[in-house]
Image 1 (tube, helix red, strand yellow):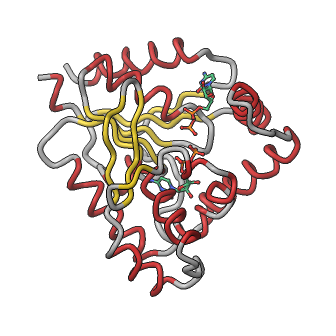
Image 2 (image 1 turned 45 degrees about the vertical axis):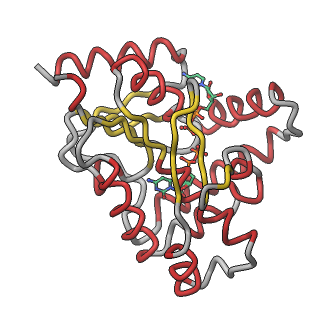
Length: 224
Ligand code: CDP
Ligand code: CDP
């Protein structure tokens, strides 16, 4: 049935992954797993407990004691670290600007991948991230790779910040996004890279609804 479908959605920051993944998961009654939230949760915990994010051993020790839970909350997803809710905390700039350093450590990634695979063990999922189609769920039924220009992605974040009443500087956002793209695509361990069998969708000039429709079409045509 549809409920056993595994859908991988990868792409750079602000390409629309989580918005599209949530919508698809809701419509097809699949579990949504935001893997970026897991790296953010560990980063948040490290910053909070003064663990040096460049020290992989220290991070691994922290990760062993860090239980990360994702729970459906309305249309979205709530994130808990050791049962304390951190949904909003993990979106703060200090986390956003350092998470790629945490996510580059090979052993941190290995442990996260194990946890992510467990979440998809006995159920259909829509999972979004950077390495879902390539590493976490290479046998996914459908793999999507979303892209959009840096300018468009910075503008999306800018609008999102303004609507939330968060201070926002468009030029700085452009720089931050380009830097995160660079770090995520050039790291040694499972860099951001389109899987050979993934379908690339350039969302620069598309609305959310248009992207969701395209993805649904692909799911229908691929899962026959
Ligand atoms: O939502 P946004 O695109 O800003 O990022 P995210 O999906 O929350 O991911 C935050 C960061 O976690 C990324 O920039 C990557 O450094 C890292 N990440 C990763 O390495 N692998 C994943 N599967 C998901 C996220
Ligand atoms: O998860 P990821 O970082 O890839 O992106 P997102 O958080 O889902 O989307 C970033 C912002 O772009 C959100 O405010 C979306 O509403 C907006 N957006 C989009 O996702 N897709 C479009 N085609 C147009 C706008």
